[in-house]
Image (cartoon, rainbow, N blue to C red; front, side):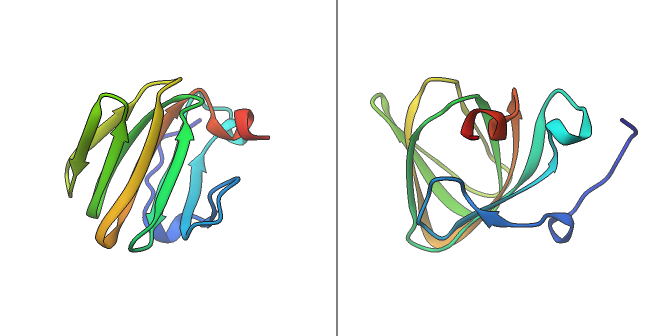
Length: 116
């Protein structure tokens, strides 16, 4: 792979796999590109909730808006410029606050491979 730069307009946003909520993801680098990680953007509409057990190590960077990530150990909230790390195997509930949220994410390994 070569050095690349991306922005939100580059992402083909699709509904998050297995979800009915208004939560969309767009991979920019993934297993199809030969890289070891997945990089992309996520868009969460206002008032959305996503509950799942994290299948890969997942780093979420909040670019706009606010969201809360709840686990059995408690809840963390994050806004612009903040990063949430969700380790593989952790059961989480992600809830948007206010106007929703735009995030960037990095996962290892590729999350799409475990959802296929």
